[in-house]
Image 1: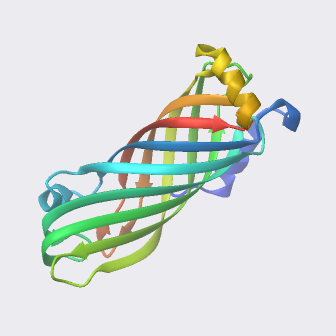
Image 2: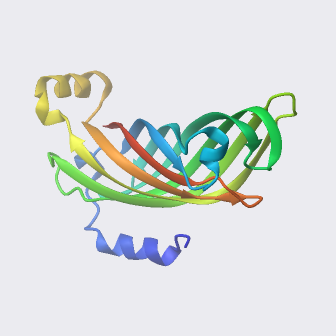
Image 3: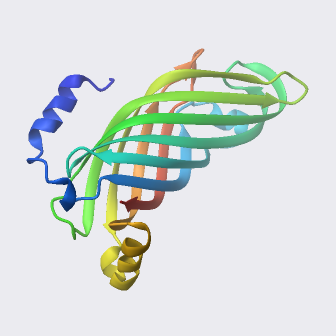
Length: 208
């Protein structure tokens, strides 16, 4: 089921009053990496297994201390032999590339600046561009829309080394640094083939 405006409105009504901009970092940057598990039951038949690397960069802007809108760009790649799953055509060596772009709304359970652990959930609209390079055949590419859901947990790193945190703040304006782990679920299909799946990621988040 796709996210609805009613869900977003309910989330906004649950959060406390917005805090002044001077009391919180407004911008964020994330870089993350991990593995993606395809939801296509036949993926392992074509590519040897249903897991392959995933990477992403994300930018966000806080509307409230707990509410953030953001944009994330990802890169996923796999290689195999046999048939190209998206179109079911005979193939030799096959290289698969997926470039997801996610427009997200995220709710974070953060209530004070020095909070060690911050859980969060999010959802959003996605645009998936794909490319299949098949040996001795023409490349196939395209794009389609889908949805993304995610949940994760952030660990504040500032308190582990306060001197380093102060240097980052003074030099480039980083207010807080986090390590995080995250699970993402994407739902998208094209031509009867499933492009979505579940990603398990870890990364670093910088709040400015």
